[in-house]
Image (tube, rainbow, N blue to C red; front, side, top):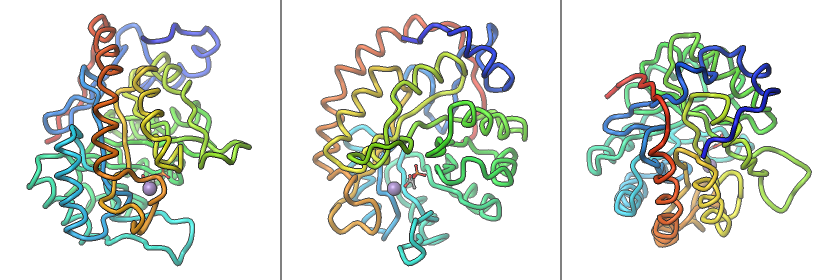
Length: 297
Ligand code: PEP
Ligand code: MN
């Protein structure tokens, strides 16, 4: 499954010594509660773009857990393009997320936008999400070095893979080796989709870095009709998981409704994904050494 190393990549990425693949460390596993991200499981994270209310989140948590998701996503602090758009519920949203974890057993991933919010978000979250707009916020990345939680690092929408790995190296150098990389689409001249999913980023990152790599088909596509097929593509190219937006009533969502799946669409997506995961599973059995990092509960 893993693409062979291209000699050009070696010089380009090996300087990021804490995150680059080496003979001693070819794959690392990030442990989150009872999950092993980057291990044998394909971990699906799902939920609304933003936490809007307790009933919205609890309903969604139940539905995505039932369909096979293992991690609940939901933004309490939202980076919005417009200053007039919904900015998130803040600490109230974090409390709702932790209620949903208690109710369903799902782990929680939620975005952190500022180093000032790291401590409070780390109290509630299992995984700290760094959004595309924050990938090069070095004050934030350094603060995440000592937060005691794994970090989901999204690729900047105009960032190269080298820049993504450089940011991962900053977090690792600051003391936190538990980093999960996320391809979420990049800006190109194409306008038919919200971003262009750089599907090749997955095998390149898997070839040059030992970190787990997941795909966000929702922000890449911008429209719900493409989310399932891009998820299957992610499985085929060897991603370790997905992060997908799901909402009880996408047409009423306060953010990203166009790309959010209904519960039924998410359930069907998970069913249709299974044959592709079975294929991936068969090839993963032959993976070489695994390095286990972390173990935060
Ligand atoms: C999100 O996950 O809702 C989000 C804002 O993602 P991104 O940072 O990739 O745009
Ligand atoms: Mn979103």
